[in-house]
Amino acid sequence: MRYPTPDGTTSTRASAHALLAIALLQACAIWFHPQAPADSADTWMHGLAAIAPQASHLHLLLVASVVAAWLLLGALGACWPSPAMARGAERLYGMGAAAMVAGAMINGFALGRFAQWATTDGQAHADAAPAVAMFAFSLNQALAGFGLVATSLAILLWSLGVRASPGPWSRATHRVGVGISALCVAGYAIGLVDTDVAGIATVTLAQCAWYALAALTLLRGGIAPAQHPLPPHRADSP
Image (cartoon, rainbow, N blue to C red; front, side, top):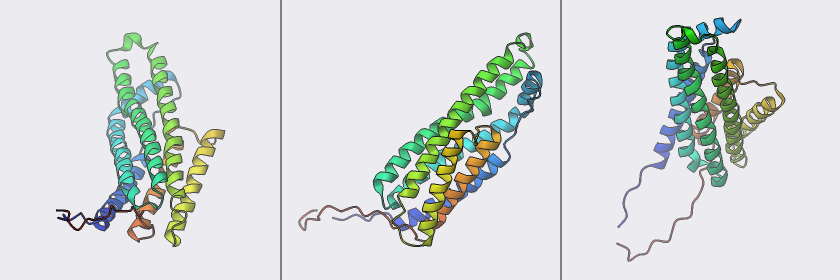
C-alpha cells in the first residue's frame, strides 16, 4: 500500500519564503545594533548599563534569526544538486551559529546585566569591573570571529554546490556566495574585517543578501533538486 507524501514543492517554497523573511529580520536587527561609548572605562561601563535593555531585546531577535536561518538552510539542502556539500555546509553553519549564539548571550545579556550591577549595587568593586567586562567582551569577540569564518565557509560550500545548475539565478547565487565568503574570510584573516559592531554588521548584511538571493533562486526554480534513487517497488508489497 502506498501512502501519500507531502508536496515537496510546496514545502520548499514555504521554506524559501521563510528564509527571505528571516534575511530581512536579521538585516534589520543588526542595523539597529546599539554600541556603548568607550571614551573611558567608567563611561563604557555606564554605557553598557544604559543600552542593556535594548541590547537584550535585539540580541534575542538575532539569536532567533540565526537559529531559524540554520534550520531553514538545512531543510532546503534537499534542493541542492550536491547533497554532500549541502550536508557539510549545514554542519559548518551549525558550528558557526552555535558560536554566534554564545557570543550574543554574552554581549546581549550577561555583559549588560553585569554592567548594571557594577554601576549600582556593585560599586564597591568598581575598580575591577572593567577588567571583568573586558574579559567577557574578548570572549565575545573570539566567538564572533569563529562564527564569522564558519558561517562564511558554509555559504561558500552551498554556493559551490549550485555551480553546475543552469540559469542566471543559480549562477548569481554561486558567484555572489563565493565572492561574499571569500571577502569575509580573507578580510577577517588579514584584519580588514573586525568583529566589532561595524564589522559584524557588514558581514551579517552581506550574508543576509545571499540568503535572500538563494531564497529567490529557489522560488524561481533556478536550483535543480538533488535526485535520490528510490528503492524498487515490489508489486506484491502491502
